[in-house]
Image (cartoon, rainbow, N blue to C red; front, side):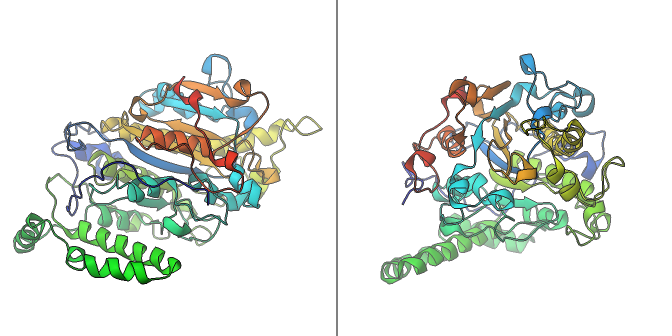
Length: 471
């Protein structure tokens, strides 16, 4: 079976800590929508340092809905993204976000969700392919879970990983991007108040803190006492049951990590007020609150990474149907904008008015990603964060998963050469390459020595990296 190789090297030591609240004095100012717009964040330089003193690399996978208006997405000459109607313009908007993020942006052109195309997992269903590099028939974990769980890179933080979404907590095919071992979808959080509670929780009493500190000092968990029994049972169980046992084992470890006390105490922000978003679900009345919810989610996500509460996250941005954000757009963005896009590659030469309508939605999506970069930058976490943003479609009117819009952003720990438009078709002729190669390159950036990622009957689909990302 094609898939990622087994972990290499010595696993990171597990740190049983409950929750790390936000970095010391001044950190609360990172999230103006939570805490007031005038403050400036000043996180401790050691807030997210690894045990050897080096800052760890963090990962955020972002789902972007409804493909792109390619004509207004592709950068112009000299990496110009400020031409009229360009959907990438938020990344070069210092008047809105305080600085330009062109220097930490890679616009990657020429990737297919090939593993999904081969199995018919395309269109809206192809969100499953984005981070797993696998169609619906695959059991490969998504790259966030592969790095955090399989390679234990999330073992040192209170939360191994988090999965956030706007308006959609379903886990059916086409509704999820994060998957555990065996292809099990990872549940998503859509309520900012719940996310706050999961990240920061309630303070422990002195008595409970002392008891939990004593337990941590023993450096043993409940599972450690039954390890031999679990190993014997695992050996005797059928293969399918072993996967389930491993998932239960992982879930118990997660609970133990989260109920252990923090080693570092930081100031927590104010809890989001649920009255600001009385409804949460798409097509259930939540659309008018999506802007507020998305801003709170990006603020909390940036805070979680900056304080090293977690190092791995996914974020599914919302379809804007019925959100009524722009008076000039129809109520049904899904059907009347995305699926009415008429590309320039069509025989008639395309319809520019459909490009501009879809580019407006694309620009709004990119604005939320730019805002996330701004928050990470304010917290001092941008340089060591790799944001991978991709859509499940290229041309949404055809439900095509070819040439999907792909962005890599952040400092990426210096592993990639940023501030560029990488047109893979220019270097490889007209051939479109499988997106799996981007996932391989990301694994390698995290120090994982693999040359393949995902599942496909065609070995060429899952094999190889993208040297073009290095410049």
